[in-house]
Length: 193
Image (tube, rainbow, N blue to C red; front, top):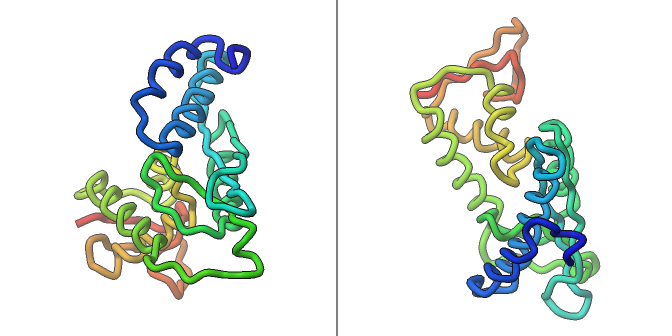
């Protein structure tokens, strides 16, 4: 462990005592792994994890952790994780994209729609951050997506929902007819009310 966390090992040991759940302790390790790479590279590192559940119980089997220096790589990996995740989860800083092998042959209907909760939470975050501003959908996505696990599809749905609620006006500068109200594009200009 000291080889993986040469500068934060002692703080991880100390801080894990204050985490009440296994999920929080695992997220502490992932966050500190990201910090280690930032310290080594002396630049910003974007990271996220993909969780696999055990085949016989609902605990974590292992993670795939992706670290990148580029915003585009962060965008791409979240899109891939979103495509393969089959467990609904709310992105709350602890939970992440999750795959459960048990659900492949035996899908279980979720009691709560986690996707809707994520979109509603993202809508609120976007509206608070950009209220009264005008910018392209691409620029909004590019500067905001680095702060969480939401992927491009989440942003598209959240922005379309905000447009449907008349909290933003969207217009296109490319002169083409579009069948949707919002696209993540430099040609889609968003004006927040």
